[in-house]
Image (cartoon, rainbow, N blue to C red; front, side):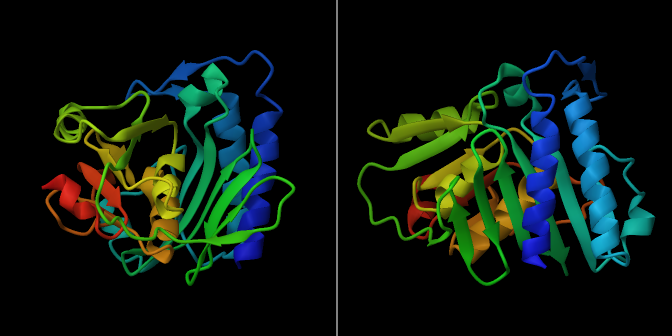
Length: 254
């Protein structure tokens, strides 16, 4: 099924790019985040294709009405989709926006595709291994590796860095710092290009599902800052403060 998911994500990316270099109207959603025709068009395409591919698996998409918890309670398996993760990056034309498609099974993200249309970069997992494919290059398996000490490489959001991130940087004055948009931050940890990504500003489950699956397959971990595993299908789908890290880097949170 992963080949189908890759095709769906890339086709959705092509749809997004048709709006990338043209003026677009911007709506403001109830959470103050922006919404464009690119978000809507990608959502419509992905959900239609997933319904064809797996008609018995329900879909949660950022741009759809969220089914109530009472309905979702009995879902052992479901798709979590962010049709355009990083709409602000899309509008700023940084290229750091992605299409995210993740599969949750018994509360665990197992399959995932993160595709960056502007660069052609793709990360994915088939549930066993994690892969990275750059434009016009062959896919290569990735691994988070191990943090053995020394000056760490930390990654955080360009637009969302709260007090915990600032405190982390103060505790590690010699750290390298990378700032990037969308779920690509998780993928930096998954490929071993960063040691830790701390996010102390809330995210939603569709922001993390696909990249969480990739990180798991690469040997990394995504936990709540409390130390608990990140749960899915929560009543409001809102994530608490979280940290993604490769083995050994959890010591940086102490």
